[in-house]
Structures are given as C-alpha cells and as structure tokens.
Image 1: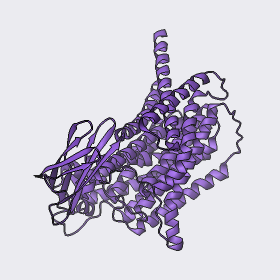
Image 2: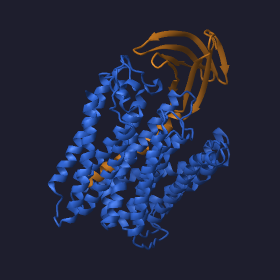
Image 3: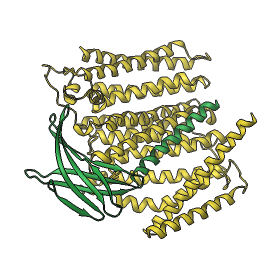
Length: 479
Length: 122
C-alpha cells in the first residue's frame, strides 16, 4: 500500500519537474514582467508532493511496514520510536529522498523569497535547480527506490546498525544535508546569472543569505559528526583525516572562501567570475563527496551497502554537471580587470581565499592521491595526520595573522588609523604566550607561533566585539 | 583489568569497582563502575563506560564514559576480552576537549548572528 503510494508520489515529482522546466522556459520568452502564476502553483505542488513522499516513508518506518524493502532492511519492531524515525535517513535510499526534499525545498523558497530580482534570473535558477532535481529523482527511481516492495512480507526487520542508533547521529545527516544540498541553489543561481547576464551586485545580494544558511548548517553538521566519533567510536579522537571526513571538509573550505568573496562582489562589484567559480565548485565538491562515499570507493560507516552501479550513475551525472556549467561559464564570460589597493579589505579577503583554496587543494590531493595510485599501479598508501600536519600547520600561522588584520582595514583604501591598537594587542598576545611558555614549557616553535597567532586573533576579536556593541548602544541612545 | 583491581597511570588511580547488567528496549548493557582518583589534587570521579549488546543485528558497541571539565576530559572505554573475566580499559586524559566543541559551535553561532543582523537591517 504505502510502497505504491510513495512510488506514485515520486513519479509526480518527476513529472512536475519536467512541467516546471517547460513552463519556465516558455515564460522566459514572453515579455511579461512577472512570473506566471502557474509556475508558482506547480512549484507548490512539487514541494507538497515531495514532503508527502518523505512523510510516507517516515510513516512506513514508524509502523514498521516491512512490505517496503528499505524498512525491512533498516528497521526492527523492537527499536525505540526515535530511532525508527531516524532510521529513515540512516540508509542510502532514505537519505537520497531527504536529499531530494532539500533540493525541492530550496528551489521553492528561492523562487518565492526573491521578488525583487530579475525575472529571467529567477526562472533560469528554477530551471537549473529542476534539472538537478530531475537527475536525482531519476537516480532514485532507477536503482535506489526507497519504496520498492517485497513479497512475501517478512515478519521482522533486519534492524539498524547499532552505532547509528545515537542522538548525535540522528541529527547529523539532516544538518549536513541542509548544508551540502543547500549549495545547489547557488550552483543553479550562478549558471542562471551567467545566462541572463545579471549584474554582479544583484547576484551577490540574492545568494548571500543562502550561502550563510548552508555554511552554518555544514559547520554544525561536521561538528556533530565529530562529537559522535569522539564518544561512540572509542578511539578517543574526533578527527582522523579519514577520506570521508575530508569529503565533508572540502565543500566547507570552498564555501568559506565563497562566503567572504561574495561580500567583495556585493560591496565593490568585482571578483564576479571568482564568485561564480566558487559557487560551481562548492556544489560540485558536495556531489563528489557523495559519489566517493556512496560508490564504495571509500570504505567507512557512511558506506551503506555499496553498489558500483550507483557510483557509475553519480559519476555520469557529476560529469554532466561539471561540463554543462563550465561550458556555459566559458562561453559567456566577460573579461574583468582587477585593481585592488594593498591596504584594502578586499585584498585581505582575497588572501583569505588563497589560503582556503590551498587548504582545499591539500585535502583534495590527500584524499584522491591514494585512490589514483591504487588504480594506476595498485599500490596501497594511506595518507594520515602526519601529511596534513606538515603541509597545513606552517600555513595556518600567516593565515591566522592575516585573519586578525583583515577586519581592521576598510574597503577600497584605508588610512593607518587603528594600527596602534593592533600592535598593542600583538604585544599582549606575546606576553600571554610568554606566560604559557613559562608555566607549561615549550612544545616546539610551531606550537608557540600558533599560540601567539591564535591569542592575537582571540584578543582582537573580543576587543572588536566590545567596541561594536558600545557603538550600537550609543546609536540607540541617539535615536 | 578484572573487577576489583586497582591500577595506577601517571597521576591517576583507577579502581574497577564492579559491573552491572541492565536491560533496555532493544539491547542489554554491561555497565562498568570505575572510581578515578587524581592523586595530585585528591579529586574523585566516577565513570561508567558501557558495552551494549544489540540483538538485531547482533553487534556490540562500546560507549565511552567521558567526564568533561573546563581544562580537560577524562576519557574511559571498556571492551571485553572474549571468554575471560578480563576487560580492556583505555584511559585518556585529554586537555581542552570541550573548547574544541565550544569553538566550533561559536563559529556556527557567528554565522547565524550575521544572518539575523542582515535580516533586521532590511
């Protein structure tokens, strides 16, 4: 019963996607200033059906309807209710349905929340977002349908992997998914902005809050995951530079860089191309991470019964995504000239971006190198903490220093107003470090330098926060 | 370690007091009761690491017992050695663990504060 109902809903989502793409495409051609009503209602139907399909699966899990294979394989009647519900996204098929839910949700919210923006830009975003939805729904139907039925109906399920039965792990996937799949909306928006030749500043304004939302969720998701690893896996660590952890860290670096450079685009209307590249990169890396984990290339707790055909599909889809986006980008790109003053905020943001991209490249190489080596000469190597410590730690020091200095500068060109304050703070940091050195002894040059840089950053941020709160108070009094 | 044994590691004395059996909804658990004494500061902590035995699928999971303090975490895991009364104990004193979580949550909080401020300005 439920399985048929669910499958029908998924078919509805599929056909609604196609309808939306078709209608939006027709609507772009008309000279109408506003988006047609029918597109809004189609999107509303789409989001309703999507949420309904997810609820159907949740109901299947709650009532342990073992006629659905997915429930049979991942649930058990004796499981507490909370983990029955969490079990919905504790497996490949269910989590893919969650993935589609978030794609559709973001697509709908982006459509209705951006009234002020250009119609063409919004419609192109909708079209590309629906292509992504289409891709994943087809994937779901082809080889990972959560609603596949089983006959004869088994009496008891196989149960959920006990290490996943944990509160932190119950909220970890939804958090991370909002973070990673949320990137899809500015992936679509980036392509849309190129196609509709939208102004950089407006584009930045339209995607800024979406970037922040997904950034917050990614950060929380990764944190909850490491807390879980700390108390559940029993080896006492929280970050192992395990390929799967790296896969989640890669988009995080890209999105952190993006979050900063989008400010430059908003305030100074420059770096447009770089922002576009980062938008494309962030979602591409999210999908790459999914591909690496789900295809079974990497082995970990995240690899639910791996299946190579899944990997192949995601790989095709990923290549299609990358090629389409890059071809559109290079065809339509306009030459930009950059002229920054060395003492401006944008230079520092750019420096932050270099470091982020460097970290990203390091982790990417560290993750993919063993795989390539295995394929090419079938040698097994594992790249662990020593590699990352050697490569990343020396660069963290200048990174932290620049991070402290950056906010002190103003846009375009700044005067040497408050650099004395910064100098005092630096001296303060040196003194604190001296105390630490005196009481706890030396742990090597690097650790001292990092301590200085970190204390410098912390003190300065606290000082800045205090000043801005005082400023706000004064403003309120004046009003 | 066996039940009733006492071990000394650096500044800590670990006393394996007893084990208890408990039945939960879909697993049974073996709860170890440990008394940890910090010999330098003369402080006593009680830690209860757990082994859970799930029946479907049949798996053992090891829950670490963690006592979080401002400057360090006491971390204790217990696993059984098959066909004996002995248990493997891993005890670690990990400095400043809680600050890693606090800082990560602060980073996320910073992002959300930024988001809220922008909303109010509009």
